[in-house]
Length: 374
Image (cartoon, rainbow, N blue to C red; front, top):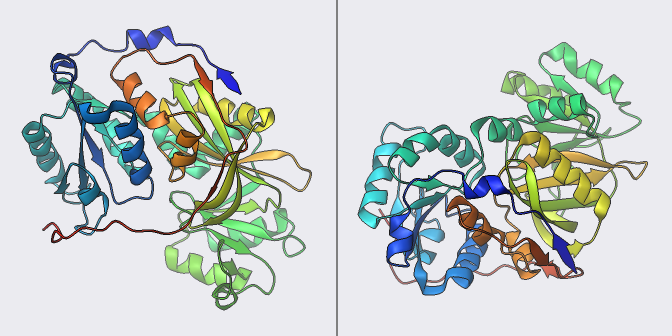
């Protein structure tokens, strides 16, 4: 089934800086960051499938055992992102490898590269990243929920946690203990800092669960928040319905194409079993969120239905998700088309999506004989 989108004229005129490295010799040299993350293997495969031998993929990561350093055509170790030597090291790699574009892959890479995008562009390097305000709001769940509530986009009921007294108030507002609730960190990734709070729940009980977030009691949560300093938490309504993950390709909030994935099983925020489905309501909600955030390139919107079967926003990842490979296999090579957008090239206005396609994830590994980078 095909999905049509409009080619945004603004892309043709986005900026006119030179892309001579990519165009003159028909070679594209791309630096991908945080290549130890779950999605890089799919990004690497998608870019190679689209560009073939005309693309060279350089990978960088802070860990010498990041698999993507060895999967990429060449890998580099870099310092921590917030260290004083990170930018200098990055520019050295870009110059030595003659890279014309940067593809930031991790959640918090997005804010760094959005903040420094003008610097890179002044040095002739394009960056596949949305505006700083867009990614900063998307990465902060409290800011995101507040925005959605203001504009009428449905989110789960939520209460910020700022002090010990706020926990009891929040629990009462969300009908605990009659109903379970969910604790989330305002800023996190890959389901880190997520817990289901229910009467009688315990971390010990969660050890025996095969997947999904841990259970906690309200008392355990109170002790945990005290250790955290009460500065970054949200208590939310528990959403018991079906869960969806929507990949959206957009330009300044205007959707070109979106792919809805229904999630049947997950671990650590990563889908173990998912299916591409045609659901206009879920797609419409995801596209509305992307429009309000004014996001560009590939982003991922996570949605779940409440007890009345109404879809509610859970979170937004302003980056390529770990299960992007399913979207690519379904007919939409978002990693490559986003790269084409960043280069100012025209992209397709119609995409044929293979609905019903599923992924059943199994674990494999990357094998190599070289020593770890140092």
